[in-house]
Image (cartoon, rainbow, N blue to C red):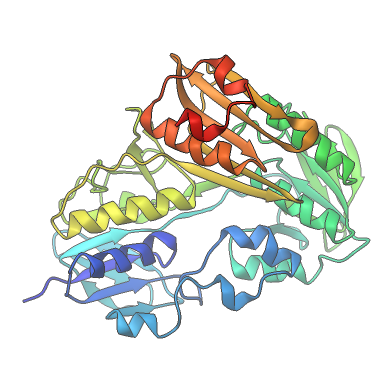
Length: 402
């Protein structure tokens, strides 16, 4: 009798697992459970083109409606898993259904980190993670409105860029001393700060938000001891892994469900993939990655392992962000002790920053510089040693460095 696979989570990792399982020849029944009303869709466009109104909702979906029936995948939406009973190998859903499994994939993703301060629950305080979140924001996202954005990371700055384009009065509050401090080098932080200010965005760095005030809805932000008027607030202060199901059934989780290099948990019948996981990265350190690349690649490896075709997961992580007409592409994981090499001129709005570690290319950050990103990603994968002088020399084409 064919094995049954249940996937909890209908996002990028979940749908990739279905596709990969079928590609690897798995023929048993697959059931996917999602807590939203929608089949798996792309999240990256939400804070960019979809919020701008330049991307139709239909284009968000990762597969056509008929894909699931054709792939033999039962899609259960608008409900979530309540508990995993490992001894019986059964997933219990909130709607009362019980799903038996031979193999289980937890692709539960992450949820927004909520701001805990006075007034945080006032109407008008928004978060951005789902289609419904963006639809709710769209209703009030109008020219002339004052939007206060809490958090100068990818989400906050992407919304700031869209807001500036759409004629909103935008102020960004960032508790740290530079933008995207956890994600990019100081050169990039300074460059993006300049671009946002040029577009009319007001930046309040080193400024933590203490409270929101208003009569029935948000009207003011209290930050750094001062009061700022606001019609809308968007909070983008990161995400936390959805690991409650795993923890509830006794699986290990340390800021992410702990998995091995085949995406398997401590239970031989349970795997996990995507934003909810913590795994040993290619450099030997435990990491939790929040990116489409990890969701896709880790789900592929989980599917391989479920199909008994084990392959060690050690892909190069990559990330991107679209702000204005600037495409930021990053490959590899930087460290504060890396030697930084600038290639190109930030003033030309086309440049890259390479990170050298022990002489080898460990990461690359590229702005409107596709060759630097593409070749840089290859150099990171190979751990290639190149001198700083060579990398900085724009008279040497990138393809020569490969």
